Length: 71
Image (cartoon, rainbow, N blue to C red; front, side, top):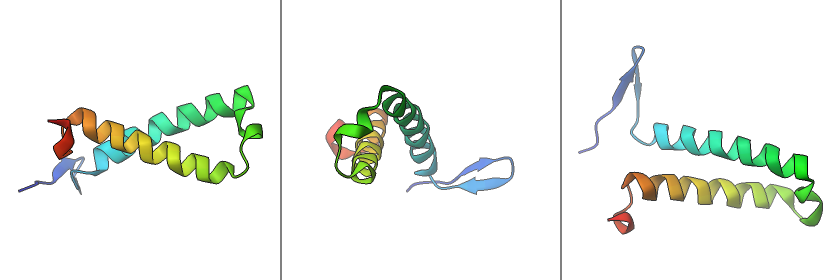
């Protein structure tokens, strides 16, 4: 059974840490994309943002062993 983590008196669900880690990586990667002007080449930059975040979250979960395919 998954247990909650206590952080400064707040109970965090187990998925919170990978979500925030993926969010941090996404923000860094988004800043790089904006600085390099890569969003100019995409028709819907918002869809690219969603896809990048989903891939980052999946990779963080796979690397931490939270997904069954990672084992």
